[in-house]
Length: 329
Image 1 (cartoon, helix red, strand yellow):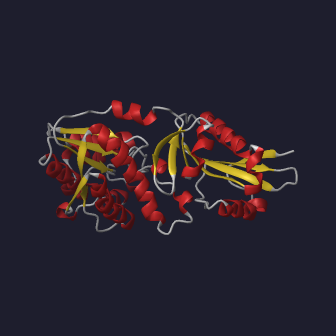
Image 2 (tube, one colour):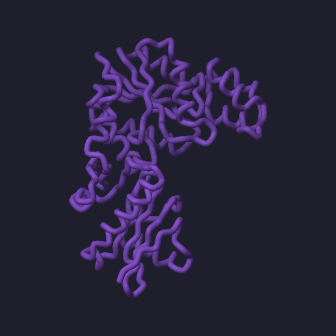
Image 3 (cartoon, helix red, strand yellow):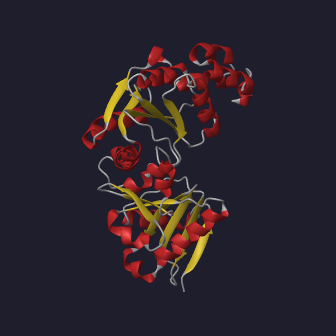
């Protein structure tokens, strides 16, 4: 009889078998799971596995010869149970497009698909409900997707530039929590720092833009360009589902000379979005200000040196929360 082994990470004695199972299914181990379920058959052979990170089900694999045993259903059921126990009820997973029917039978619904992967969630109208709650401005609508960790004068210059070129501008602030500036604080700082722009609406991105949910690196082991495949999923979701619903016709992005991953994402955006009907404008970095520079100064306790780099509202926040004490960063 098969049996299930729940664990935070695969134990050492079956680690090789775990990696081999993932490789057999064209997957790889990102090593960042909160919870893993391993299923062994009556010969103590690892025949199925799956992991959970936050609200993302990942690394679900079943030995090809065991695919008809219902093991995939057992793994998904266990991961959903574990997620709900952790308070995560809105769940996402990825599979190859050919497996749409299988995961649909487990209560997951398609969101967006590329040639390599299918993104699904456990809410029939999850994305539609998210979009319905956002502003739907008239006229020419532009968008910025930004982290703002924290919100700097460089971010403000980008927003001011974009707002002058649109009837309405939607600024999506990423909802993934960062160690230094939590999502709710970053969102509040962007709203405070852009309050004077009447045509700017600041919204939270939820899980549908540049998040763990839209960058499933583990799924791209066999891709010739896994970084591009990650970008494509996120950008297809934006262009195919989000932009049409909100009448977005252009996306603005700041130049990124330092971070290689962000620069790659921006380059792919400039290649792909125009083919999907979204114009992209890249703005030179304003006075070479970067959020990473601000974070470094804060971590070194040099709060006053951040003042020329930040809007007054962000600087006031930093004074209050860091107060020149590097330990608080």
